[in-house]
Image (cartoon, each protein chain N blue to C red):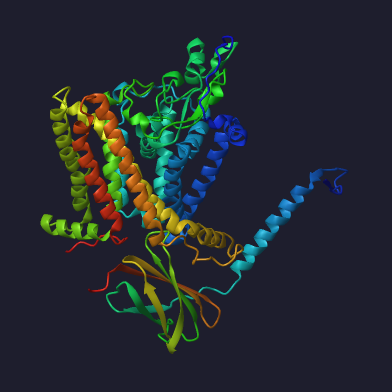
Amino acid sequence: MTAAPTTAPSAPARDLLRLPFIGVCLRWRHARLTLQVAALVAAAAVVLHGLLGPQIAPRNLATVVTWVHYRGLLVLALLAVGNLFCTGCPFVLVRDAARRVHVPARRWPRVLRRKWIGVALFAAVLFVYELYDLWSLPAATAWLVLGYFAAALAIDVLFRGASFCKYLCPIGQFNFVASTLSPFEVTARDVAVCRTCRTADCIRGRRAPDAPTTVLRRGCELDLFVPSKVGNLDCTFCLDCVQACPYDNVAIAARVPGAELADDRRRSGVGRLAARPDIAALAVLFTFGALLNAFAMVSPAYALEAWLARAMGATSEGPVLLAIFIATLIVLPLALLGGAAVVSWRLGGGIGSVQAIALRYALALIPLGFGLWLAHYSFHLLTGVLTIVPVVQSAAADLAGWPFLGAPLWRWVGLRPGAVFPIQIGFVLLGALGSFATAYALAERDAPSRPAAVAVPWTIVIALLAAAALWVLAQPMEMRAVELPG
Amino acid sequence: MFLRVAPPAGGPRLIDRPASFRRTRQLLLAAAALLAAAACGPAPARSLAFEWSLTPSPPIVGDAVLTLRIRDENGRPVEGATLRVEGHMSHPGMAPVIAEAAERTPGVYEAALTFTMRGDWILLVTGSLASGAPVEHRIDVPGVQPPAE
């Protein structure tokens, strides 16, 4: 252990860890455990009611909590603070318990240290959600939750660190991308203090002075070294670094949301974004997936599926949905981003490669994608926020055999859809503005002499996608299973 | 605060147990009694035959009437039931519609509903028979369509 550096700290202007009450709560050693235990209890209730309760989605905790409250609160937390749902992830709690019995010895294979599998799993979850109408199936929702627990357990009992979180977890990948728009990030309070540090406890873990192999406080399991950490990508907000740092030199600092998307510095645990096609693919999936997920809930989606089924001669939804997914998540992005990259490359004087431009500017779509996820999930949350009350009453009555919490108040719902619509529009427009700003910032860096010209094709792509998002939100909702002719 | 337990017949033995133990035990006993009481309630109605129709058919967004014909295992109309209809969308978090069903003729009940949104609906008929036996029946109404222009 080294002596504490004497450099005067230059603390961030706003540091959540320094706030009077919140700071104390966040620094509390068991803060994360408390969140995780609460989430585990909720997950247990979801699974039990999903498997044993009424198989009617609006009356079951599994479907109401998962598809209305969890998703809505998750995106609002990302917007307001940061990746809090990874902080309280119950999968990690179960994994940590299992690691007391079986300590993993292997490292995650080097060849897989990219997010391609995570991207594929994220797309697969979106596909399965639409194909089987998971929102309407309590038992299937419960099995999905159990599947997450099993996968996290299986991977992290075999492999060291947070391999599941970093490379596989679809929710984690979603949260990592969305948290680039969060207003807070975990960072060093004073990098000068880090320069004098010789133990790197924030990543290695704080060790026992007399037994260096004994870890007293865990370091970052996602290989993010605080002094060279940039932004929120791959950060689960676990605050292990806060607990491990012997100099109290970690902050949860306020920052400009989305600014990190135009920052191409080498990042600890991530590298340079320009050299990460997997992260660009994740950004594309995040954005076009938001459009597809929202589109699937409105009437024209059913008309399109029926038309495609006739054209393909399909009698089941699978092939039709697969065609829509391939068109929306692969063909359309390749055409739009490829076209924009070619035009941008020419307007920029042919510097660099078209592929490199496409990879960089794909990140500019993330704010719009996040705006659409917010618009979609906050709609369900705000219009159905109070439905948790009658469902809990009903679940309690099922459990006890009599309504000891009172007769379920089924009329408790939430805001009118019409009242939420302006909020949805606001989220999409705000997201589009963020995307415009990011594209312009990238263009300023790439072509300082003519940034506006270089940004034009990306501005058009963003405007087209924003228009498509607004059109989708304006359509009448229609939540039903697909019935194909024949 | 401790509860002192009297020594058992086998010899003197004093056990101090906190009062919270007593409260927990009382709560568990009360819960067991409540569950037992619930289990001893009226037996659920069995072997009832439900036939239903919706007007208009196929159902569209807007007002609709659910007509429900209930017969017992001998084919006799089930009279005097008190029924309520809850209409839920297949997606959670949506506003339900709730209506009381009125008996129009012996064994035939009607409930006026309003389908507020297109999509798949689930109608849950709950209530009790004249005997007090509880009734619950689920009706799936797929694909409620918008009204014709």
